[in-house]
Image (cartoon, rainbow, N blue to C red):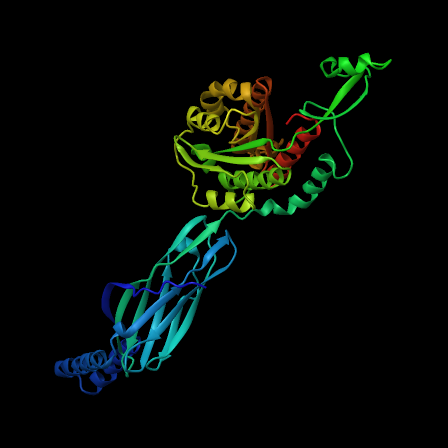
Amino acid sequence: MSQHATTPARRRAGIAVSGWVPLLLALGIGVVLLRPRGSTVALWLLVVVLLVALDLVLAPGPRAVRLTRRPPGTVRLGDPADSAVVVANEGRRRLRLQVRDAWQPSAGATANRFRLALPPGDRQVVTTPLRPVRRGDLRADGVTVRSWGPLRLGARQVTYAVPGTVRSLPPFESRKHLPSRLARLRDLDGRAAVRVRGQGTEFDSLREYVRGDDVRSIDWRASARTPHVVVRTWQPERDRRVVLVLDTGRTSAGRVGHGEGVPRLDAAMDAALLLAALASRAGDRVDLVAGDRRVRSRVRLAGARDVAARLQEAMAELDPVIVEADWDTLAGAVQGLGRQRALVVLLTPLEPSAVEQGLLPVLPTLTRHHRVVLASVRDPELARLAAAADAGAAVDEVYAAAAAEQELGRRDWIADVLRRLGVDVVDADAEHLPPALADHYLSLKAQGLL
């Protein structure tokens, strides 16, 4: 594994005293009781100060320490990682060290204090366990080295800037649903000898016309050569485009579920990862647009070997921004990816006011050229609150239930408006949204609508 081998820059220096110093001062109380005079107190304080000063003078300088960090790399959010620092004694004296490898709090560093005894020329590796609690690049704050004197009363201390970064990726917990959806996909794309009729554009075969067939599928030339009217059948196309549009605006910052819940943005990322992995296995090209007032990330993944891994890297540093999403900007970014018809998946909360004021005006442009799906993370607390009021409920519970019922009604209304505009709506809680969105994609494939 590669290492950062450069000598770290010193950030700050100082001294430290151990717990033995207060103990020595406490022992002086007994001396004062035997000889209760002011001079006794002064003499005892002077003795303690001289001992500490002598220990500091005899303590080897921590500048003889050389620190080298091995980069921890990447890890999924919530999974453990390790940060290893090589501590080398390049001086001529034996070192008694106390080392602290500090990280920013969200890196989840634990057990990061170490006591070492290093002979001249020796080295040891100290390992700090990490468990990130947020996505993105999480950085080391510095390595503090204390070099203790022979009495272990005082230490000379230096904090070095030893660069280190662990990249915390979205966890992709919905990966468990991928095998079952891939099995259904194999049935659809012909590996299980299944062909479907629909609005695809890849010709499959000819067959006799039956009542209910689209007259536009009649092959008049072939019909002229047979006593029956025949129609063309089609199979869903491969190499179609799927554009994932991730809303990082204000509404994505909320948390859904019991307790602290899960951020809506993280749940939407999980759904996007499952759909991207499935679509790439189907031979479709996957693109990502993420943003709010401006585009925060735009990734084209055509030809990528592991689409889910590339998306995780692109999503790692995305955070909600407390502004309203500018759907004109996001729709323009989608159009900028190409005018070929695509499945455009809008991963945004079904918040009536935000959708009505920001998204509705740009939908005609999108639906004119693309198949549009809106995938929303639903808060199960709304349904729980709406059902909580009963005959013996308190006034506060009744008001909360009425407000929840009203909000659910507004969500149903805006969902109906979207469907009348030609937008498919997939609205589910954080746990069920990824498989629901994947199933909707497979349904569109089965109907030949992609």
